[in-house]
Length: 300
Length: 300
Image (tube, rainbow over all chains, first blue to last red):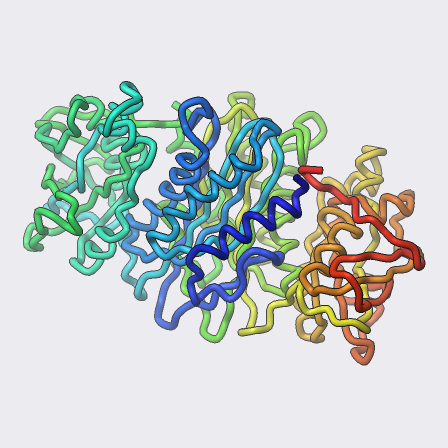
């Protein structure tokens, strides 16, 4: 297939999906066009998924890769308490990918996009020797209401959604619920929207492991954190996987003790795991012992 | 260097650059935050630059690659007649890239960003076995004023800015002005802004060659085009390079014959090269003979 034929197919798949009314022009021009809502802020994120780093072609089907590529970016929107509007998808494929592979990649991505009313509005397409995708997501929030990493204050309580370590455990077993969890992470969009309305103080998504992402939140907020080892560990996973395993895409957030946080939000359990304290920015404590952040670091 | 250290360096470089007032939050959170202007539309584009496809590490310095990565996306904004606001940069590097290489990549990118008041507001960073970058640009236009590919009408005249084939010729000689042109393409932002005010009917940037990009414009406008071989060919280049060579990043646009188009816009020459005609969508004619589009197609 030539590029124009591949693009025509992607365009027809995209136009079969949800078209957000704010998108005036999607695929087919030099740029996509968005008409932003009044009194809204827009939030933007981009995330790679790279063959051999984030997935393997022999264990991940095309639709899984498409799902994961979008889920990573949607998870960042969730962490800002933002409602998704659209995505751009830059995809490079090797000569080994058939036209059916390309179709399945976009189907996996668009199934997830549809669930969250997200328009596929454009992107780029290239040939390379490996499969790489970069997904850009844009969402909106009411003005000044985006949840930031930098808002945690000493005395705030620390919470996580769902269970931790399941994705890391799935990567070991390559079967069952944990492996499906690894293949098809669920971005916590609805939870993020409710957290924003609840007025939590800070939020981040756990993409690289609880310890590393809590460290990042504390760095931006210039605070320390004490957490307990009584974590919501996913079935089969161990404490190490819950603390440092990547790809869970749960939300980690903080709120003043005076703020009532439900034990379940949008059907997802919420667990109180510790407290924000004064101290060296980014310093972590587990059961009163120093905890070194060592989640997934591309460059460690 | 660990990821957090690399990010701190990129952040400090970015914060040394222009900070557009519409960007409420740049690097350092899950997403960047933009407060859009009233009565404005926003336009978005993403473009890969891939090692071995768009550049070679032995001939392109890090700053050249950073420049080109952003220039490709800015050129898409230029083609919409849009004023740049911000960019996101997803960069993957191999262990061969030193910290100085990373710094130079962002310096090259930020030098160009500064020239067009573009804030580096976020992105992604990953390790891979080759260097790949995906740059997302966002710009703004007054409502309903973005220049589209789809507005060309039979009878409209066809114009190009600057000279064609220079970048393809530079790729052969690897020296002199043509090679510098290939390494450091100039996005025609100012020209695009003026074209928008002049009320031209359609516009596209020439990234993959005149014939292929004119074909794309004609497909979207459902028209044919007749052009003359009396093209503004860059010094040293031949007609074939001017017709089919990629990476020139000039603007190709159409306007009704009644619209006066200056011979020079923002210091860039403008040449009348042909006319839009009724006929099969996308069909091209050169000096009254059929012209097959055969510019750069990743999948041909």
